[in-house]
Length: 420
Image 1 (tube, helix red, strand yellow):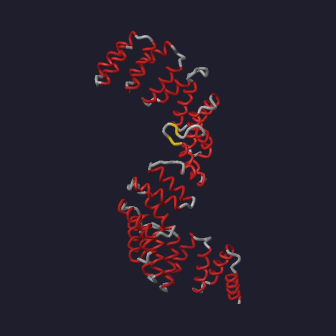
Image 2 (tube, rainbow, N blue to C red):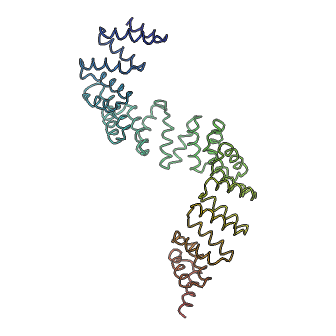
Image 3 (cartoon, rainbow, N blue to C red):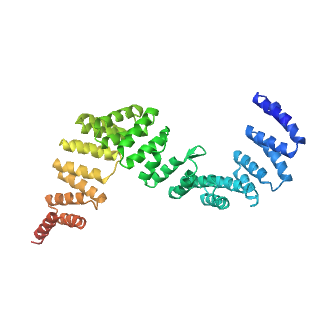
């Protein structure tokens, strides 16, 4: 022991090489108990190869000793020799006191290799041997949560929570909150989040998002504002907080948050889009158009921005700008039947009926079941004298909207005119 203590003191004073030499000499003649202490020091200090040499020496003498096998497996994991570790752990006898520990290690290793079912089997075997061991319940909860089965993880987390709020520095109420939220149980999740006193930005973001999903914008706003006080560089929260303010009709507050967000992230198309929406609500049409154009400069196929901007131009009776906007987007590779529909309406307003018909036909390929489109298209076809096409289109519309008596009567008149 004096030699070992001396080695420890040498390491504490930075004399590592001298300490290793002393331990190496001591290991040659030391009793097995002291050898194991030397192994633990090697492991603690990161001298894995030296630890392995001594462990393998002991393993020859004690081939079934679980403590030696599990420690040797741990060190092989540190050296990224997982297959060696697995073979060692699988060699333990079921009667060995370290057998359950080996099952836990195996579960981790198999999980790391993506063998989740095998990992779960090992943990369930461990649980059958020690049904009240919280560490096993926690491990099962963590495994199931990590592989996208939070509904199965919940009972294990709940069992852990009966005795402790935290394990391995992980908050159990937070894990339960995340689990419930991920399967849409937002009300239950919110109850768990409310138990927390966390200042972790990620936790606060999830807390606010859960409240938002539960239509508790008051909570979401409070939590997200706190998040930004802690970490103003948490870019994602600006958009979400602005939406919460917007839904509460606090347009000025929403716009203020968007502006702050854009200072942090000037390439965020969603924030530019929100700014466009909010300034339009504030009757700042020119500013709205500028923000939307900035969003489109970042993504020429940003559907929400294209359609919103097209709607603004339509409300201003600026149909040529709608045509220019959609055609520019299409030339850049953007494709969507709603673009063609907007284009068709704009051409129609500009009395460019040939181009409108072409756009309507393009839109019809992607909107075969859109009742609003079919109705509008059917009336347009009638105006263009394309009665058979109009009848066919309006018949599709009636199949979707069989209670629209006005269109039924109109369709009957079209059929009568064809048959006369």
